[in-house]
Every structure is written in C-alpha cells, then in structure tokens.
Image 1 (cartoon, protein in one colour):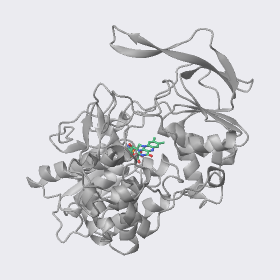
Image 2: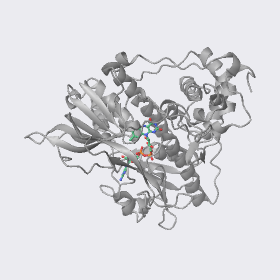
Image 3: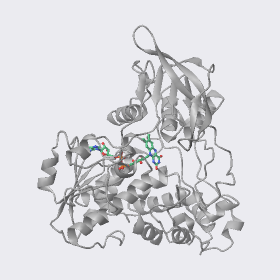
Image 4: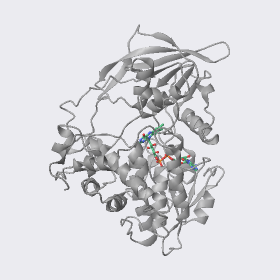
Length: 499
Ligand SMILES: Cc1cc2nc3c(=O)[nH]c(=O)nc-3n(C[C@H](O)[C@H](O)[C@H](O)COP(=O)(O)OP(=O)(O)OC[C@H]3O[C@@H](n4cnc5c(N)ncnc54)[C@H](O)[C@@H]3O)c2cc1C
C-alpha cells in the first residue's frame, strides 16, 4: 500500500471534460487525462483495504461486483502512486490484454465496488488504468508479441469485437496461428461501429489491430462466415473455430406504423454514422440523417444515450429519450448496499449534452410508443406515446409495466431510433456450425465455452452471454482462449501476461 493516509488527504479528481456545448460540435473524444503527478495522487487514495471487491468480479444479487478480469487493482494503484509506470503496466497486462478500451468505455465495476466509495468518492481506477496503458504505448512498452515457437495449430476466430480480439491475442501469444474473420469492412465489432467515436476514438482500435497484425494475427475483412465463407471451409482448414459474433438481434417494437420511413434500429444508425465519418476521414458528417429533425430515442440505456449524443452532433432540432421503467433512485436504497452494483439514476454524457442544449433532461420515464404516424409518402411524422405504470403479476412472480388508459399523447418526430435491447445471437452463424441456441437466444455451450462439433467449435462474448459489456467480452475471450488452448495442447499456460 502506497500512502496509508492518501484517501484522507486527497479528494477524488477526474480528468477534465469539454463542456457539453463545445463538445457537441464534433465527434472527438472529450475526456482529457490528468497530469501524471495528479494521477499519482489519485492512485494514492487506494487503501489496499484488505477486502478488494474491486477485483472480485463475482455476482452479488445477480449483478457483477468488481472487475470480471480480476485486475490486480490495489497493486496497480500502488505502483502508479510510486510512479513505477512500467511495473504498473506489467501488472495490468497480467490479467488484461486490451486496457485501452475498457479504460475509456467501461462503466467501472471496480469503482462501484471500491471501499472508498462506501462513504465517499471511489478511487479513480478507470482513469488510473488509462494513464497506465497510455504511458505504456507512448514509451514503447506495448510491442508486437511474436511467439518464439509456433505450435502448428490453426485457429479461426469469427468476429473481431472485444471477445474475438482478446481470444486472438492470447491464442497467438501461445504460438497458435490465428485468423480473424470479420464480416464488416473494418475490425472492432461494437467497439468500431456501436460505441461512437467521441467515447472511443477509432484510431485506438487501429493502433491495437496494427500491433496484432505485427504479432502474426491475420484479419480477413468482409468475410461473412456462414454466408460468403462456408462453415465447412473453416472446419476443414482450421483445428479449432471460436465463434465471437456478438448478440446483434435487436428487440423490435410491434406497433402500428412501425414500417414508416424514419423508424430505425439504433445500431444500424450508429454504424452508418461512424462509417460515414471514417470513410471521409471525418471531413463529412452525415447530417442529413438528423439535421433539423425531432428525434425520438426509444430505450433509456447506454445505446440510447449514444444515440442522443450522436443525434445532437448531427444537428437534431430536439431529442427525446423514452424509458419504460420508473426513474431509479438518486442514491442507493437499503436493499442495494455497497458493494453491489448501484442501481441508481445515472446521467450519462449524451443526456448531459441534451440538458445543456435543450434546457432539460431528455428522458421521459414510464413511457413507451403505442403507434407511429406516417405522412402520405410513408415517412414518419409523429409518435403516439403512452404512460406506463408498474403492476405486480403474482402468477408470473414479477412486476410488469402496463399502459395507463387515457394517457396517450401524440408528439411530432421525424426520426425514431429503437434502442430497446437485444434478443441474442443472429441465427445463421451458429446454425452453420450446428450449434444450438438456449432459451435466451444465446449460443449454448458447456462451462469451457465449447459448443459442440466434437469439441472443435467454441463460443465467447455476447454470443454466449447475451448483450453485455466490453469488459465481460474480453474476460470471455481470454477464458475461451485458455479452453481452446487446453483442447489443443492438453493443458494451458495462458496466464503469464505479455511476452
Ligand atoms: C451502441 C452500443 C454501445 C455500447 N457501449 C458500451 C460501453 O460504453 N461500454 C461497455 O462496456 N459496453 C458497451 N456496449 C456493449 C459492448 O459493446 C458489447 O458487450 C461488446 O462489444 C461485445 O463484444 P463481442 O466481441 O462479444 O461482440 P461484438 O462487439 O458485437 O462483435 C461481434 C463481431 O462479430 C462479427 N460477426 C458477426 N457474425 C459474423 C459472421 N457470420 N462472420 C464474420 N463476422 C461476424 C460482427 O460484425 C462483429 O464485428 C455497447 C453496446 C452497444 C450496442
């Protein structure tokens, strides 16, 4: 433990963020790092408290508490406090092969479980992590990992999201020859085409992919496995196949007028925007999608928040976000004690921006769409909203939200983005390998992630656990890499950090 009294002497300080009105003028990352000295003081707040839930990563009351990768958080914080940046990176890299992503986009399960957060502000572990990995990159510590010996075993990874990337890094490290098949034109999965650029600059993904290629990992883009690339080809040419295709089947809204032009799925919209930005090297914004429009975002989660922020950057006249559930409490209730994940209202960056521009929080709780209205040309012109109230369904043993009669209201809108969650894996990829889906629409697998085909096909990430978080996808990818390695070699030593 670095500074026994650090948490008493220093308050929490986060890196500066650009004010909402300024940052909505472009798609750049807006969260700047702290100076190194201040970051060290932040790390000094870590108490090495003896009950490091921050690195626990297990489930409490059905929600993850602490880091699923089991990052050695108190040790890393101590090394940052001492200014031992190189050692801090080596310690971080022991458990985590892609920290530049989580240190930008993770909701920081570690911080929610930090002991300092019991009575005050938690240690700024995510920003400490970002400082460590960016120090490592800028000082040449993150190098291509070329294995000294190749095993002669070939592994195909399908999908280049965080699960596929993490698995590829670890399998290559072990000496297996890895090819990543990706149906999109660029690698990264939802890191690339879901999470907007202002949250994760796409050059951060390019930097990692370049390193992976220099390490010997091959990427085949525009390769849609199960369609343009037959499953039989992979099974014939590779010793193992790891499916990491995500959980992209969106939950739809079965309401009248759903076919109106201008009602779209959120991820399709976000993908189109990021692709247009990247294709033009950020010279052209696809403003025609939103400019001057009243935009309705259906879904109060992170995807919806990203839509709010993106629509504002494209010049939307007004953005409203609907959430079916009641507004969460502002602070923990007694039934949700630390170190459980706090089920409290979070006002994310897009909502802050909308509040600054529009004068009020864009969210409407306990509200959903009952119908869409079209103009004569079939274009969306309005949505009929209805209020919802909770009712206990004793037979089903759960609370359901039901419409309040007479609360219908028509609001004008010309673009509606459905961000109502995901229903699991698309069917064609697992079907091509004869892998079954479970009742939740995820690919069924044993504890090792093995999905059948005589132990040759594995599955990881959202495709196995359902739409989740980047940190879980990486944890899944690393675990799958160990399982694939064991199945090829009879044992696995994939736990030693970078080569
Ligand atoms: C809009 C949005 C914002 C999010 N923001 C955050 C956030 O801020 N923080 C966070 O922690 N999590 C966030 N998430 C969740 C997170 O992005 C996912 O949990 C994570 O990316 C899952 O990783 P994955 O590798 O399992 O799948 P994905 O990232 O979905 O990657 C799957 C890849 O497989 C490819 N693929 C699928 N089928 C085939 C095929 N047949 N052939 C070849 N390739 C195929 C896809 O094109 C894709 O590239 C967000 C999700 C969304 C939708």
